[in-house]
Image (tube, rainbow, N blue to C red; front, side):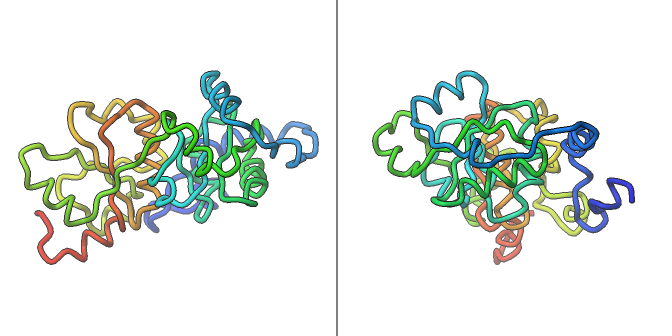
Length: 245
């Protein structure tokens, strides 16, 4: 099979093969040591995490989108573990970046191993019990905005309408979309950041709220300040009695 055939097609609502497939193909031709997750899954304190961030490391926060929204380290990248984690992480994190993992307790090693399976083995360690640490360092914590479908409908009728980004795959978009939304599949978003305006509120949405949280955190990492994602995704939008459009 070709990579695109093995991975799925847009006609089925699947993404095209992500960039990390090429990276993995190159790795598969090299002789590499057996991966030892215990060596990478070591606990880090906040000062170590911040030093790593300043050196270019990305914090991959694998918690649920709601937990992430309630409080996370500034510039952390949300990629929830309960979903297509490896595929999604490979779409929004570069293979050459060092990684710090934030995960639910006792899932740190699982996340490290799942990253390693796609060749992302530059994991410096993990930050345990972030909720506790956040209480001690609120200056390094931020909340994420998540809009309900009625709130988005109201905003779209207002004087300062948000720029709405549909991060679903083309096959999904063809089945229906929020009027005026700009389609940018999640896997393409890192390479299309220049298309996102900086002078309007941004709202990202997907089918149910997983990819939109990933997209919104990616945009915040890129310096876009006013970013929200849609709770419940397009499914929640369709449930509105009187949607915009």
